[in-house]
Each structure stands twice: as structure tokens, then as C-alpha cells.
Image (cartoon, rainbow, N blue to C red; front, side, top):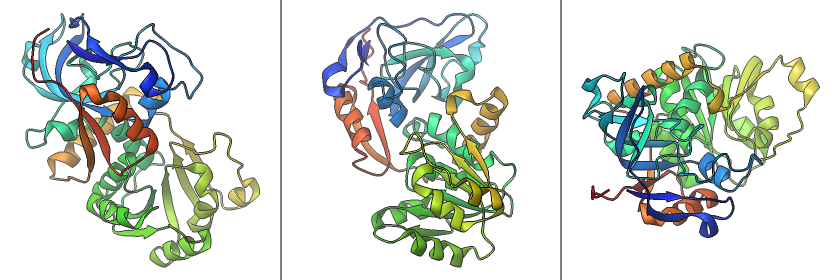
Length: 334
């Protein structure tokens, strides 16, 4: 099968390779997906670049955890009824060497989620890590019905999904974006109001948000904890919550006493550590969101598998709003 892989960590252009690998066979409790699309996430490129300092878990890694396609084989213990299902998957490369940057992937059956018939496979490939992270970020502090939720980075992969999920759950949803042209994307995802922070002091952004939520924000979904500490403190009500899934500064300085006097609660979220119940809840909510007709995911570009280097560089450079997908070759010659 056609696949992309790396055998050492480093810059994309130096370590990523494309070629042929054997088609995998499912074992007990597993199924095989004939992939159509592979979603490229920031976490995928960070692993390839060894940004976390964990090194190589396997001698060869086929990257990417997210994808979508058709189930074409099942292993022992998996119902034959799953054959032919349209599915999206998550966690494909978690603890395994073979991710979705290939024509086929084998993974535990529970990680392949049936996709509503009305939803294109390309959208399914955009869920996975961003979708599970977004759901947990929205619901980390409990139900948001009737509450005001602020999503930073509302045009991003996690941000757009968080907006859709929060609105689905009955929240009043505000969003911030860093570029004027991104406002339309956050609105398309379902934000009730969007504030662009480009070129203005934190105090001005805070004032604009306070005008929209005079009683204060109940819950913040944060793409960059370090960058937004002062802003969050300025707009959150007493007893508010921050759910952060990333930080530009890996060692942010917390304004401890101001946060303490507001009784703020900080949730730090890592998608690899969500419980099975949290994952099931997220999967169900994401499918309901897409089945409802929500189409707030923006796909920035489709690239062929052989352009995997370009795909990784595009994600690293954040050179556009929206998801980057690799499209698998149509041939079935193994």
C-alpha cells in the first residue's frame, strides 16, 4: 500500500518518506479501514519534530491519528455488520506505529465511529483529536446550558468545533480571532458574536467582550493559556472556569492572587488522557452535531499523500485557517 512514514525525528523535508508498505491485517477486536482522507494535526507534526522530547516510540512511524474511510475487513470478535461502514477514526497512532497517512489502517474497533450518511468523509477526517478536545474543553466544568462560553481561536480546528458543540449544548457563545478575515469562519461555526483582537490592547478586547457579557463570562475554551491569562481574568465572572488545551509558553506565569480572589478554576486538557466515558460522550455529541447539518469545519486544503511534507509544513506555519487533509490514492493495488 502507499504510505508515508519517518524513521527519525526532525524537519519534515528531512525525515518524511513516501513509498510502499505491506497492507495490515486486523487482529482480535480490530478492524481495517480503507482510508480516503487523513487529517493532519499540530500534535502530529510536533511528534515528528520531537517537540515534546519523548523520542521515537517505534523504529518506523506512519503518522496521523485522524482519518475517514470505509471498513473493508474485520478481525475476530468484531461484527461482520461493520463491513462497508463509512467511519471516522481517532487515536489511530496512539500507542501504535501505524497511523492514517496510508491507504489502510488497522485499529481497535471502538476507535472507528460510524459517520452519518449525510456527512462527507472529508469532514469526518477533521474530527478526531480536535473534536474530542473541543468537547472536553466545552464540558470540563459541567453543563453549559444558559451559560456564556468564550472560545479563543474560534476559527481554528478545535475552536470551530468548540463553538458548534457549545451552541448545540445551549450556551451563549462568544469567540475571539486574531485576524479580521477569520471572523466569518467563527460566525459560520455558530458564534453569536466575534471579537477580533488584532492590533489592539488587551484592555480593548476585554472591554468589547464585557460589552457582550456584562455579567462576565462563565467558561473559557483556551487555545493559548499564556497569551490570554490577563484577558481571561478581565472577562471571567467570579467562580468562572478556564479549559486550556495548549499554551504558547510551556511554563506560563499565573497571576495567582488575582485568580484566587476571583475563585477561578483551571482545567488542563490532554486528549490522550480522556476517559472512555468522556470519549464516548464526545463521539456521540460530534455525530449529532454533524447530523444536524452543522458545517462549521473549514478545510483549508486537500493534498495528495505524496505531498505529506507540504502538509506538515502548512500546519507548522499556520499559513491558513482550517484543516489540512491528505487524500489517499484511489488505486487498490497492494
